Amino acid sequence: MGRGTLITFEGIEGAGKSSQLEFLAKRLRAAGRNVLAIREPGGTELGEGIRRLLKGKETPLCGEAELLLFLASRAQLVRERIRPALADGTIVLCDRYSDSTLAYQWGARGLPIELVKELDRFAAAACVPDRTILLDLPPEEGFRRIRAARGGPLDRFEEEPLAFFQKVRAAYLQIVQENPHRIVTIDGSQSPKAVELAVAAAVRELLF
Ligand code: TYD
Image (cartoon, rainbow, N blue to C red; front, side, top):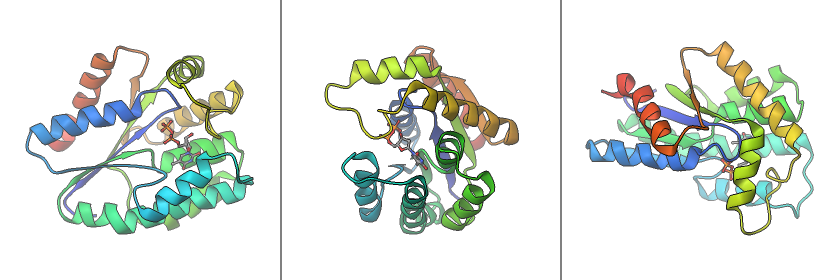
């Protein structure tokens, strides 16, 4: 990895990842830092096409195909955008990354953990986050937020039952146990301002 820093945001739907990523990007840019803000799946032409397939409900997808699509998007994103940005000294903020694949495709879909980890290592190459922010939220609250905020129809994942998100959250908490130095867990049920300050504190020592 180059001189840059890779920071990823994780959590269930409605945890506030996207807003908090934007707040942090703004804060770092105001401090004069170069920031690349991207999301998964997506961030490249291929990734945005894959994103439409994955989130839309028109195309039937088995769990195995779903996993490989997420990883195809990641492989392209790492090589096309993340690695060059890191080599350039940029701070890369990524909305979801490898921990999402473990939490959703292993934790919730039940695919074999060692296989998911191995395929993710192949896709992400040696691009491991320097810090991961997990915004933790009870699934009931995430569910409520998504349904209150969404005017239109729900996507493939948002439509899953509460039990699915309970499995995703449990998987995230297990991943934290295994990576206590990389992952900082923040209570996503606090006010957005309180979460923003906790996120800033979580990256301060890494960046300044
Ligand atoms: P998105 O709208 O980005 O979700 P959110 O706004 O909650 O971040 O949609 C991405 C969906 O894809 C989300 O439900 C989580 C899921 N996902 C996986 O199942 N595996 C993965 O590897 C990734 C990156 C996302």
